[in-house]
Each structure stands twice: as structure tokens, then as C-alpha cells.
Image 1 (tube, rainbow, N blue to C red):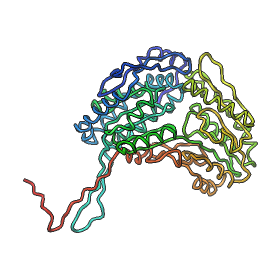
Image 2 (image 1 turned 90 degrees about the vertical axis):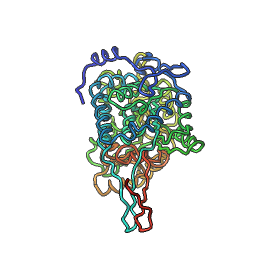
Image 3 (image 1 turned 120 degrees about the vertical axis):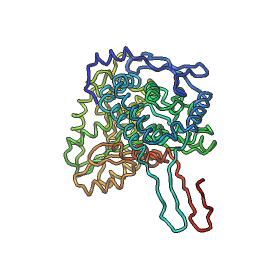
Image 4 (image 1 turned 180 degrees about the vertical axis):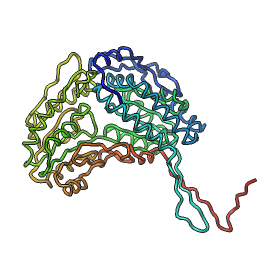
Length: 508
């Protein structure tokens, strides 16, 4: 969207930010009813950025009440789709005007490299929201196959009050993926951002009101996940819930729905995603670039991170040498320095968890090729790219989702074995496959058990393609594409009797 500036420019912007600190309910900032707050910390420096309202069940009740009132009023839910589109387009324009503030806020709150915020995250957020805005007046209903004595209309209606529970790794982008289709369809939305990364969600809600989205339609409740999550999951007046996060928490939301009003639940959970390199893979230099990008992008804090490299023994040595050469370009350090490709781990607890996995890999006998030790830079939580070879399928680093910059290399003796190793995980979110022949690549893509498979590249698709997983990676719907509307709409049949004995509806 914009050219990169200097580290000094971004630091000056950070110093001048007016950070939001309260919940956003019914079109305005409000304190938590309990008065409680929590500190949000810059993971690159250890400095406290601000104290944020820590909401609880009583705040959830209030937000749901206002969201329901807004929905029933029709101010947004029954606003003509073309007008909802125009309002959301205005919202995107405001985001673009405030781009630098949002980019820097995202970086200092999450530890993400500023260059990713500038070049990837914010542009994709604007594209996503604009795309769903444009789709708002293009969601046609259907007419069932006609018969002489009846007509059946099939129409979509907004689900009602929708909760969107977000992860901390892509705060802005995950918000856009969920609220874009939810708002375009006419719902009222309650967003629960991750406790570690609440700031940009609060700012986007404020800008949504400025753009003309009515009070009560877009609400943001920061706070502890366990407390707010349970209150949202069990609330009898929330109609649908979309969650991105761990499989463990996803299970909780299913239980909450079962124990309350059977609200619709869509889950996008964990992943242990493989990059599979077959025996005839060509252009290994390009393959190595994709492998490095796939595992180290966003510090490996990415649900589609290709943290497993499963490579045929015929090309392994050559590919690994190229991977080690490519990773030299991925510098780790201050997120506000555009020269750095990796920033800080999001929190001290997550930093410790990733380092524990690295130590586990060493103890279980994997061969450390690169990294393996933290980068000491002030109080920042930095872990440089780490690569293990000689990994076997039963090792912990081959089975668990690490969510950090750690690559585990497994060697396959045949192409069939490589595919089988990739499918041995209980997850199935994303996979990449590299092969020299198109037929082999496409057959392999068909055999891989994942919601998205990229061929001879690393990709999550784009806004037009559905995103979600198989197996423990989730179910119940998809983010992105027109399929995302299925999460946030109800399908209604309207049956009209045209027979001679039907009651005639007269117009007075």
C-alpha cells in the first residue's frame, strides 16, 4: 500500500500514538463494569504500552443487549445492501487514511515486523473489507425448480448477533476475515480480541462508527479469554460464533454451545503443516525460498506455517543446503526496523513455550543445523530461525504445533512415504507440495488431507478462496470467499401455494 519508511520514522509514530484503552460498546468507549484493567506490553521492549479494560460476563451481557437492540431496530440488518456496501467502503477509506497509525500499533502490540504490517497485513485487511462490502448487494437468493401450483423462494437472512473470537498472531487480518462477511450480511457483531493484541481491534471499531456503522453493530470486548470466552460461548442470545485459535479452546466452545442455545460454531484451529518435496522436484532454489517463507513468516506464529519439511532423500542434501543459504536473508530484531524479517515473540509465556520445544528437540536427538538459542536484545523476546534435521515422526517437534520459528526436517525414502508422513498428523489445515511433473503434483495435492494445498509454492490462497481445515484443524464453515457468508446467514424457504384452493392474498 505504501513504501517503507525508516526505523526512526516508525519510532516517532509509535511515540505519538494515542492508544485506545477501553472496551467499545454501542458506539463508544466504556470502562469494564468491574473497573478492572490489564497491562498490554510491547514484546520487543518489555515496556507497558497502556492499561486496557478487562471485561467480564456483565460486560458481555451489556454488549449482547445493545447488539440485539441494534439488530432488531433494522438500522443495519435491514439497511439496503447497497447502503451497507457504501458504508463499509467509507470505513475502508478511513483505514487507508490512518494506515501508518494502524501499522505501527499492530507492530508494537504484537511484535510483528513493521514491513509485514505495511506490505501484507493492512493492505489485505483493506482488500478483504472492500471485497465483502462489494459482495453485500450481490448475494442473490434462489428459486426452487418451478411447479404449476407452487413457488418456493430460498433467501438468506443475517443470523443475528454474531461473536468473533480472534487469535493474537494476525490481529487485524483475522478481524477482517470475520467481521467483513458478518457485517456485510447485516449482523450485529461482538469481537473478542486476544488479550495480548487488543489495540487495533478497538481502533477499527471506533473508525467503523465514524464511517456510519450504527451504534451496537460493532462491539469489541478486551479481557481474559477464559472469562469472556465462556460468557460468550454460553450466552443464550448469541446466534453464531466464529473462532480462530487452539484446538483445545475450540473444544470448549463446542461444549458451551451444547450446554446453552446450540449456537452455530465455526472453528479454525491448530495445524502442523507439511511442505512435501517429491523426488522429481525442480528449481530447488525457488523451492528453498518457499520453504523458508512458509516456516519463518510472522516468526512462525502462523497457523499455516509449514513447520515440517518432508523431503525425498534424492533431493534432500541439495535442498537443505539451499534452505540454509536462503535463511541468511531473514534477520531477527527490532520489529520497527524495516530491515528485519522476524520480530519478537508475542509474550513471555509463548517465548518460553517455544524455547521449551527447541530444548525438547535437542534432548530427543534431532540434529540442530541452525539457531536454537534466543537472541539477546534488551528485554525483547527474540528467537532466530531454528532448523532441526534428522527428525523422526515420533519426536515431539514433529507432532506438536510449536507456533514459532522452528523447522523440522524429515527424510522420506519414496514419494508415497512422503505423502503418508504428511497425512500422519491429526491436523489438516494447509500443506504445500513440490514436484517436477504436473500430474504427480496434482495427484499428491488430491491425496494430502488439508483444507488448502499449494502446488509448487507456499500459499493460503486469496480472498476469493475458502480457508479452513480438516480433522483437528476445525470445521463448521470457512473464512474468506463467498463461502464465509454461510457462517453468518440463515437459509429460509418461503413456500407460496399457487393452486386453485389456496387462500388468495389480496391487495387492499
